Image 1 (cartoon, rainbow, N blue to C red):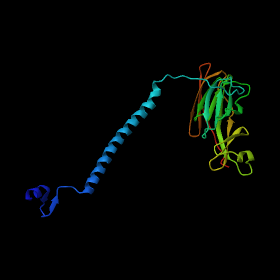
Image 2 (tube, one colour):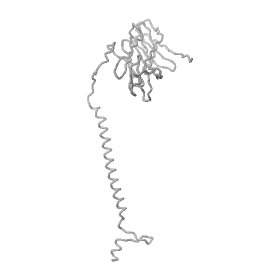
Image 3 (cartoon, rainbow, N blue to C red):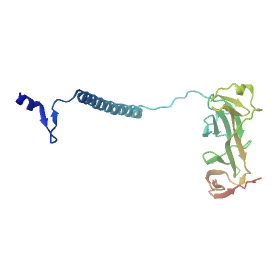
Image 4 (cartoon, one colour):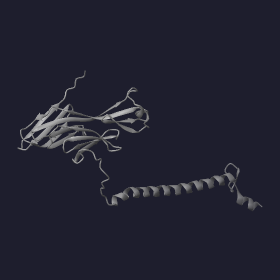
Length: 247
């Protein structure tokens, strides 16, 4: 009996007897910890594997052949002239396109309908052009040696209650409707936002008596710097500034 008791009990330095057999609660906690550690390890392996598969899925198109396919045209008047520059508004609802014949077309992105067509200079086709301020400033060079600077920007305003029609009121948030050479959209807050394109044409600059072949433009804090090369090989530069009436 004494030998058996010594195998299962042991006195510590306080004189108390500690049983070698663990309690049932300790065994439960040990089992729970073992399962948690096991599941955590398996979950980590699965998570890393999913990340690897996602990276493969993202990179795989880089090894696929590429190509372009024409899906259709808007069929608008003057669409035969090639597009040389385009810009979107801040709400991704309108796009204007500068064409080689010197016209600017405003279209809505949902249907591709032409909402407005602007002519920069009637009867004259630009020979060269330059863009500054992300499409806000357009400069054109012509055959008679003149240069025309323009400002093209989207103008946005919100309609008052007296301007909103029944058709506008019936719009769902995010829906758009063509209106007066522009487009209206109902916001998530229920407001009616009207966007249109505004073109301001400055007085032409007579730089040379020869055809302007190449144009360059750079924006400054209060205007533009225009550099032009004519057909005779002469280089011209002009600094253009604007003054605004605060009243």
